[in-house]
Image 1 (tube, helix red, strand yellow):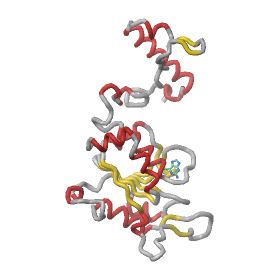
Image 2 (cartoon, rainbow, N blue to C red):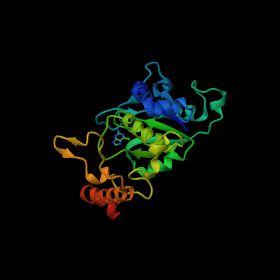
Image 3 (cartoon, rainbow, N blue to C red):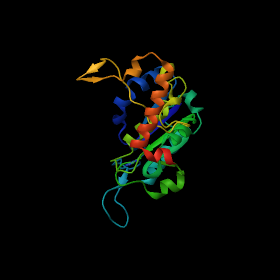
Length: 238
Ligand code: 6GU
């Protein structure tokens, strides 16, 4: 999967892109992440990317020409990160990270993971000039009902959740299809234990040491159901 990120703060992604799971996926050629600085597409001498809102009010608004031209250049392959091979990549699915978007959940993650190419547009400040939406008609996505300073952390959330579903990214024994929230599983995970068998007087449940796999599976299923009922009853009802 090819992922292009359009941001005013590409440096924010450096540490994340170098972290183990994503780094391995990039090394194996399963995921290709490209960062683009929106500022490179500003046309005036001050390299401005935002301005005060017409009608007044606090904060700054991302300007339409700069953002639209950046997205179009990246989607058509008309930018310097492209080589001939990548010019042949399709425009991809354009996602705008915004608190006004549909809320990200595992169903949306699964949907995004079927794309061959994602283009993630991160905004800062008070938002985007409305004409960016009107011209580009992006898939607007929010990561939850709280306010972030910008779309960068939200974009990393999308990337992190999506790449786990790209075939080959996870090892065999950490496969994603039995995760909490994956299709057909709307339960929280059961509790887990590892060594030591006793810690500050707290013992590992006997059944997990029994070696009886059928009984262990039954206990875990029951604990999952109980945890979900206690913590997230909404998952059981809808
Ligand atoms: Cl995608 N962006 C911002 N700025 N805040 C958010 C968000 C996105 N999702 C939730 N809050």
